[in-house]
Length: 113
Image (cartoon, rainbow, N blue to C red):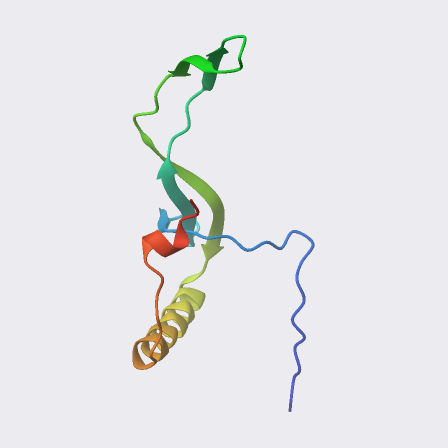
């Protein structure tokens, strides 16, 4: 028997970059994966004083952000069988990546200026 699956993007589909994950096991036995983007924090506001010639006289940023932010982008609840399948899929992709000649952009190349 053959089964054909068509891939379609759901109504809420989006692509996102994540550079971390946090989670654990739920009481129902699922693995809770919370993917996040780690970045610098933003100030609450910026206040700029300009003179009659539109030149900046004074600039205040309040408060100056000291902490990093981990913005949680999505949470996936997966069962153990799918987690094992995902590990194998990722391992295959990593092995393919490592056997190919691929140039990975450095942080300088991926950061817009």
